[in-house]
Structures are given as structure tokens and as C-alpha cells.
Image 1 (cartoon, helix red, strand yellow):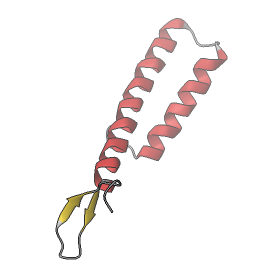
Image 2 (cartoon, one colour):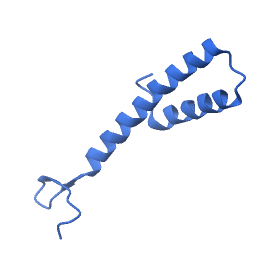
Image 3 (cartoon, one colour):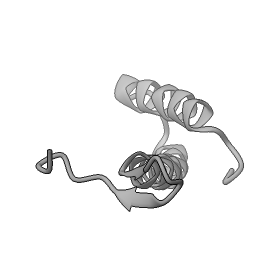
Image 4 (cartoon, helix red, strand yellow):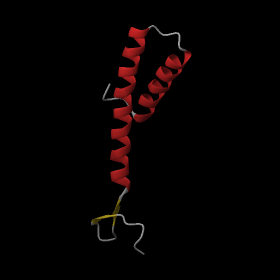
Length: 73
């Protein structure tokens, strides 16, 4: 499950949420689906954090990587 892309994880998460929202899922299945959903949320969160860290750095003209600070001009 860890090797899913963000988009694939989000799509699977949406399927699970839609299934659980119907209320027609037996309790044991609902617990299993909820557990899968929480794993998918963790994957999505990790991928978003990694993307945020990558975006928060900028490369200067001399090739040095510097933390991005939007308050500095």
C-alpha cells in the first residue's frame, strides 16, 4: 500500500468513505475499511509533507538550496 501514488491513495480513500457513508456495511467490514482508510490517510499525509518540504526550498542562482521564507523580500 505504501507504493501508491497520492492520487491512487486519495481515490481509494474516497471509495472507502463512500462505502462507509451508505451505512450498509457490516460492523466487522466497516472496522476493516476504517483501518484501511486510516492507513491511506497516513500515506497521503506523508506525501503532502514531503511535497511541502520540497516546495519550501528554493535554489539560488549559485546553486545553493535555501529555505523559502515568504516574509523576506
